Image 1: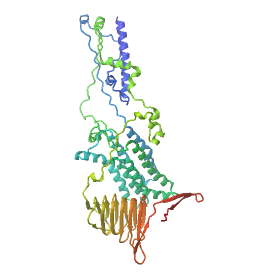
Image 2 (image 1 turned 90 degrees about the vertical axis):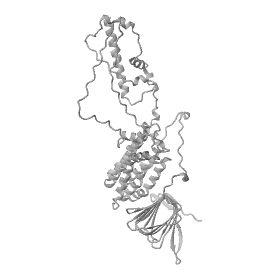
Image 3 (image 1 turned 30 degrees about the vertical axis):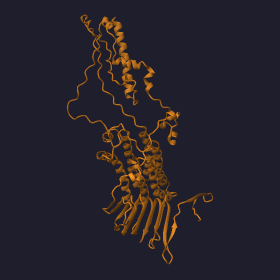
Image 4 (image 1 turned 120 degrees about the vertical axis):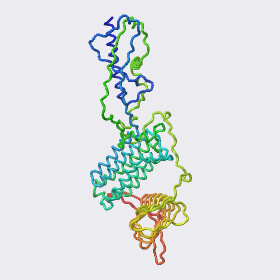
Length: 541
């Protein structure tokens, strides 16, 4: 009988060792355990090592008492690291394939270009952290002051990267690579797509257009002189194209956040600025180390007649053995994904941005995108006209009844933003004027030191009374420019603009003559010259 008991004990120990090994394998795996198998999520103590010492048997007088319960020693729970969401994992691929390629090309050129590229890389790393937080946190309610401050704190690292890139451009205006710095500084606003709720990929495309204004100069000036410069600007353009495809696939209607997640402030504390999970707090300094764990309990076998009388009640070990004995059915609750549908294993799927669905009827219906509010329902900010240092700011004027007049000097610049149906008169000679997001704005200036830069505006009118060296037009729909005799040699650069007319004084009567700027070009490859020939299309009325 003693030999039979010893055989049963050895068999039990072997089964416990097998069960413990399997539990450790499951605990170290990153695959989430199915809910249908709760017993596998319980921690189980490792059995004691078998020894040659004889097992202690209770005296005969204790045969009537029930057997002692086998209490396993508690083991610390194994912390499972959450797998990265697919959108964040794909963003890592975008950084490693597109952004790092641009950084490598910048490092070959070195100097200010490499320094600026490091700031761009940091901006995308901070954006990766923002995306990771959005998958775990609820969207902050910006109408609440506390949530608004949290939201601004989340965007602060990205904004700092934007400012760093622009600062390098502004502090190196006399540099021979100033055009390259301008191209990157104009395009870095692409990082703001995370704040756009409706079709953010359009913001990425518009940022590419802004970068091309200076980037195409780099291409034309270095096409045959410096191949490294050409490769560099092409790698910078590729960032926008790859990011457009990424945003279209994962965030077509903006960042959805996690409606069931924690507050953004709490989640941000658990994720460091590098995008990794924050390390656990260090142990308290000083003090004696914790005592060792108690020894495992000894197995005490009752007499044979007590074993026969005891009923095999349910226990945690029994539940574990039952699940293990199910064999392959243990993993039946896990979702199987075919390799043909894994984008990280199929580059062709990433290029196409879509994964084939064998059964369209099973495809989940996504919620409709949030439509933008009509202009009449948007919160209108108060008009603003102020001088901050050497910079005048005029914004949010709408249908102003009287012209807005400013006295300016050569050291001052002027920014005009979000104004409509308004007339602005600048008296004196300013340094530069920048205009953005305006409708039916009329501007009258005496003279300027450098340029008038108009971006994303429509039905714009400009009258120059004195001298003006340069006019820059980007994404303009309709404009009338009136030049004086002193500004007849003004240079006008236009990009992605249409319906632009320039009025110059001609004749003895000083009458204005309207001259339209071309915006339709015909391109044809000349086999004899071996190059593309571009001709302006003329329409005869």
